[in-house]
Image 1: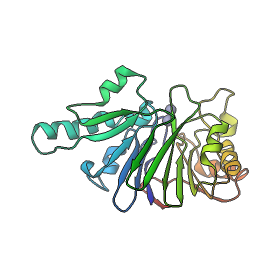
Image 2 (image 1 turned 90 degrees about the vertical axis):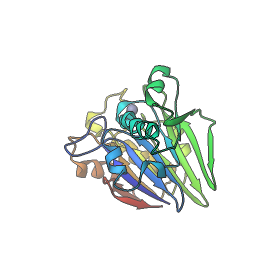
Image 3 (image 1 turned 30 degrees about the horizontal axis):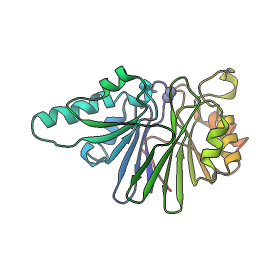
Length: 244
Ligand SMILES: [Zn+2]
Ligand SMILES: [Zn+2]
């Protein structure tokens, strides 16, 4: 299994950067998790849209969904021209009905709601979800195949549920939107220190941080997280592939 980071900024990109988007691949399946601004052009360097088996949107904030708004044209317009006949299953929270309606164009996507008990089985891959603490309905994602487990936090404040959900994961991709000095009590994101604490309490083998504030010095983010996490810790890099 491998994971390519297509974009790792939030809630807006640094110059030349992109917001949240991750391509998860096995030998024969491709899963796109989140599709923020800048993600589609990066994805197209790796594969074509029709190679994607499913799309998961963890929540409906713009930095996680913006490029769905143009991917729908890439599929929908080409369908009209008879050049394409795919309809990609797209899993997302569907509470915001007006927003969900805007995600689709000419049946580019088959939109399927995510709830906490949703389980997706794709051959021998199992995907499950856990509600996180964020201003809108947001889900962390767990992907299991054989003995390997990958967890992505999506966006969240500190919560025990993420620790339980990530227990003993081979890889936790965890948001680290803040430095501790900038974190207010009700902040909707984790500080690097908190991300490290979650990784440690969950006993994950490897922690990769993501969702970086565009102005941050990432060396500082890594140093802060390493104060609470003592196993393998990395700062995600755009267009880098990580093997699980
Ligand atoms: Zn975000
Ligand atoms: Zn968010």
